Length: 349
Length: 249
Image (tube, rainbow over all chains, first blue to last red; front, side, top):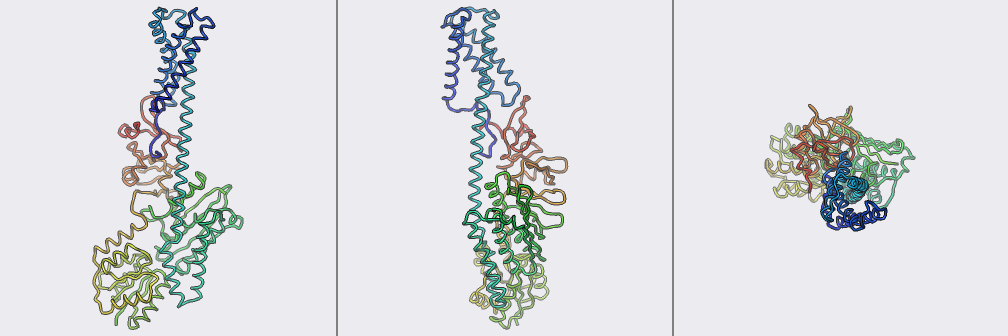
């Protein structure tokens, strides 16, 4: 539904007969009341029967003509009110001719009574036009509300999917098996470093499992998790990786969704540092700017490939940002002039 | 005496493999160890070892690319942590491979096979399909999902969902998002071919619009069709050729 442009004016849409029956029954009732009122005030000295017949003829004609005008002009068209008034005038004329035919009378067109009736027709035609405008606005608002609900449901759905993917991604097999291979090697050759690696891996796994299962959590938790992750890579890649994480203590206490920053760091390693023979640096910084928390992951790796596309996990980050923060969260990826990639998350804080 | 080269971008893994080879096959001479594919290729060509243990994911060249470019005979053993498609292909073609973490038992079996066997080039078809598999592994190739655009000194990566529309202008194409306009060199025609046609509709020779960003399609008093956007004030004209896209359902 979301992929199609919005529908045309509802006046032309097939919405089942009921709504039109109500509309015209309502108008007919109104006409009868007008006829009664005119008789009470003694308009033209006619009988109640004649007045009601004329009212119905004129009112129903005017209503049908205005209906046509609304069906075949678009919202916001400046001709609409003018056409509606013209329809009321024309409806008054046709209605009177019809009335003459039904009652076998012969009110002269352009005579005094005719013009008076015409004036009354224009008056109620104007009220009818306003009624049509109001009805249309209500329909538009209802449609907008519905569209917004659909959008929100979709965002929620994507949020849940993204969460699922995040759960699957947290222990990426390459990461796990390569780290285990390093551990197996280091246990013999450098038990001290092996213990250090095991501790970092343990911290990362424990934190990511806890973080994804528990509600809440702070930026500090996320940064600790990333510190453990980067430490694992630091040991594995040796001199090819350097990293820094800087965040002021008050920022670390801010609430932060679990594993939202992790994919950006994973990309920096996997697509920035690892493919580069000389390796590079990863820098994570947290800053607060007014009401926004900005997190930047900057690497000095090999930059964006020729065909950045799927597989970066960024769609997933974006979907989670949209589900969590709507329009007030943004993800920006840039390739700075001096190389590497800079990914920035901005979220309300 | 047999000779071998080891290549893996993680230094501890190279060291560890070297130690285990020394234990399991003491006569094997390790002529070089390296951490990237380019150097691995160059060393194999220069030193002509009898065998090479190649990590699949390495900077410079992948292990598979090294294999494809070799012009000297060398018995190859691929080492991988988790490339299940590659592993299936290795199994099928009886190519030697090791899974990280490598167990002594598995390494022993591989070495037994390597002893006294002749080096034979890998079938070209296998290498080609493996390269494709590895390139495609993270996600099948699909429509373009990201647009790279110059923004000042930096290049910004824009998710296609962020983009409201593309507009051709002389030499360049303007990428219009909710709050920015950036220039790229890719033409509307090329973009139309690469983007998801269900999400981006061409509405004019020079305009490609994100369907999700359309608020309404309207006829003006002259009967021309124009699009209103959700997050942009301007309207986009729809040429007659593409007006059928907005006919009523």
